[in-house]
Image 1 (tube, helix red, strand yellow):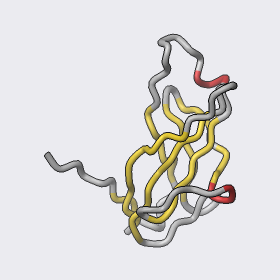
Image 2: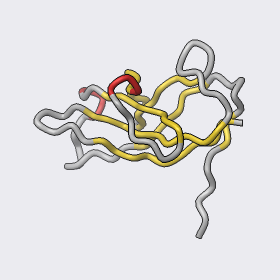
Image 3: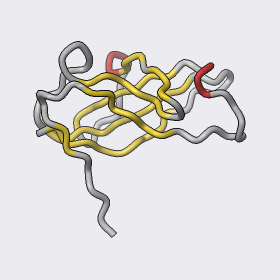
Length: 99
């Protein structure tokens, strides 16, 4: 089975949303700090790649486009980092293609 990579026009301004499931169920995600990194395909994020995110329902989100994280055409890997002391998981969240 092939998974389609979302295609987003470079001129678009929208929230990039990543669905997150809490474990254990019932944990209030919106109480936890969240960051997202959008890096060129095949790269792992470093310190300066992380953008402060926000919660939209059960989605970690970051604004992309003018006024947010501006991306040039290409394929990017999306990562989520949640601070849930004592844990800080780095979650690979898939890829996007900016056209």
